[in-house]
Image (cartoon, rainbow, N blue to C red; front, side, top):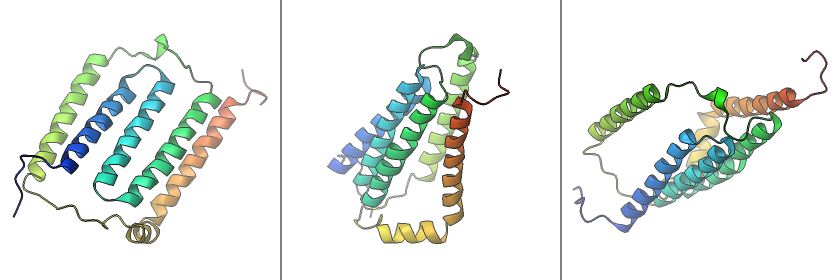
Length: 176
């Protein structure tokens, strides 16, 4: 038996509010013209996602979201911005002039994704039960099934950091 959709429960209201914050900050990540502001909006987006994981009773995933993505990935991005001496403010040479086409493609892609998700999950309902995001089941899944992609991601992040350090060095001979 599926419950009625109206009135929404407190969990659903909090989930919707956090979703609005996540989508809004994600839009600001890709539309802001300042790179550091984009990284900070990404922190807000990841924080809202962690909140949605808490609402869905996946506490372990929420803390991993905060520790790994907010605590490591965003800090790594900010270090990369600082080490490569990327332009902090607005830069005229980075504008390609394809905003209208990009907006049309983005809206079309979003419409297709929303249509597919609504059509695919229209009748699906799963009641929220605590314990589905336990550390034991997730750890077993990560280190048994997903160990190779997990390690490949860590090597990729390390390579990006080393590349940022090499690019930022000015004492290497042979550079113009």
